[in-house]
Length: 101
Image (cartoon, rainbow, N blue to C red; front, side):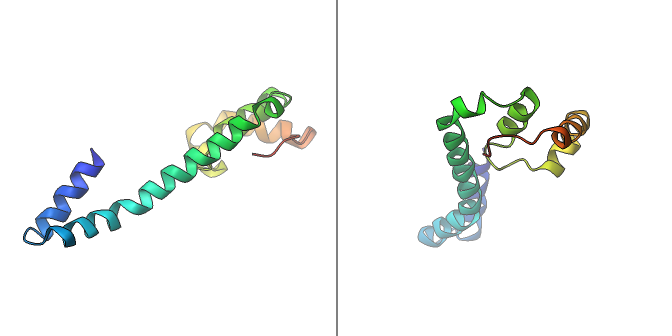
């Protein structure tokens, strides 16, 4: 849907010049595409090391899973799930996780 809206905007700005409109569309959507691809790649790398992650304590596994794509940082997660982050921070002081993303 977002692509359709961006294409409509680009075409309305450059209605008589399709190549320019398509360049505008790509310029508008490229950063979003790159963010999605980077997140997918980060997630794929996480899954390649799944067996290692399974050795983590449950809370560390959960944090690793939630942050695997790099699209959710601790501040954003704190807004979404403050109780989980509080629990994670309390238990992390006791025992650091064994595996990084």
